Image 1 (tube, rainbow, N blue to C red):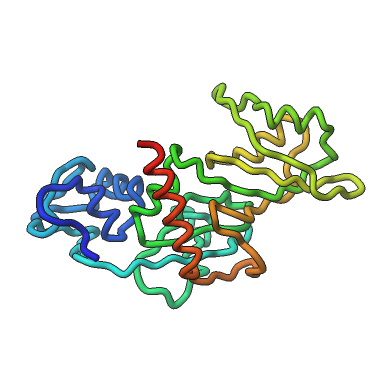
Image 2: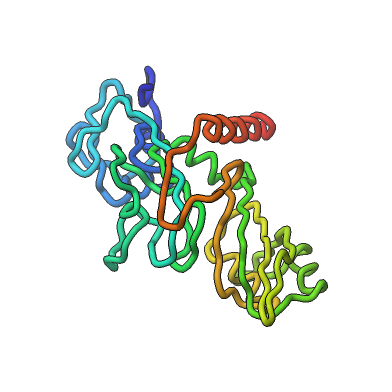
Length: 252
């Protein structure tokens, strides 16, 4: 599959199609001055290029005209950052993926101290659709919280509560296991915001002790051990593409 056809296309979109990074990640590459077109640095993501004619390089390496898409499901452990590299030298999720060819990047992210399902790919176009708010891709979490929330406290999460910056957040939530002094909650969000689950639980007086993501859209973590990864099955990939395309057509 090629990275573009005839005519001009936005540079960030060309990079995403070539598997460099997600659309947003590609835009950041360009703003950082890491991309050249015909030997000249380009800093504007909206610059129009012809991938069949222009000489495009990223970090000095010529952009490939075709790529083989790769899709990997990882059960992220705590203590790893969900980025390609970390300025502080902490281990990244890519350190857990061995023997995979191509430049992978995470679709979204999980906090350093959160574990669970994380999709890694080199398919920038699919990543863009999965993360776009209009698709409302569900994220399912299991959160161990301090104390046992009351029915009214859970109802407030379902109705929506104010978080930092005045933004209102709501979630589907239920208690699925109670311990002597703590509880496990099942929480479903339709958008992924930084530390949102932790902020919501903190807001009702039940801070998170442990957090893991067990599903993302049609993907489920299943029995995959912590720290291990596997390629998506053909059926998983079909369902992933099906749900994004269906929602794309329905929003037009």
